[in-house]
Amino acid sequence: MTLNILFFQKEGKESYLNFAVYIQQNVKRGGEVPRKKMLIPPASIIELIKKVGAERVSEEAAVALAEYLIEIGTEVAKESVMLARHAGRKTVKKVDIELAISRV
Image 1: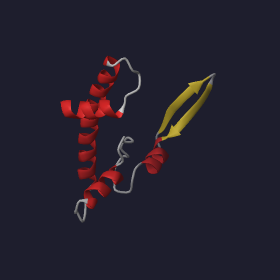
Image 2: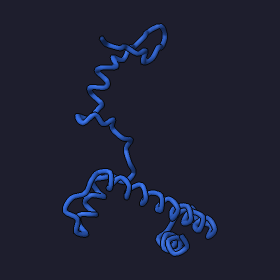
Image 3: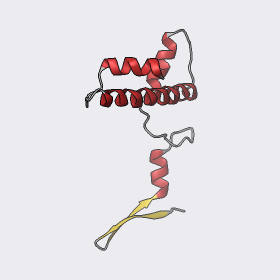
Image 4: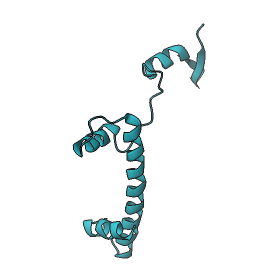
């Protein structure tokens, strides 16, 4: 049994997406659906954790740390943008980041 889904309809032309083929091409072997692209790749986080002594690192651990770093980085970025604007600049400079880190 195949399930065809109307993908788009434009100017009377219909294009159907074969759902079974889509799932086969886009689901990893373990049954995992691919996660959205992260700002900090888990592979980079795994490398960082291994650099400080870990022998093995799970992808879930790397994703958790990446999400935390993105959260903190976002707060620092917001603060540094506010500092640059307060100084009458459009460009965020190193001094803004350093001051934002000390304030967050």
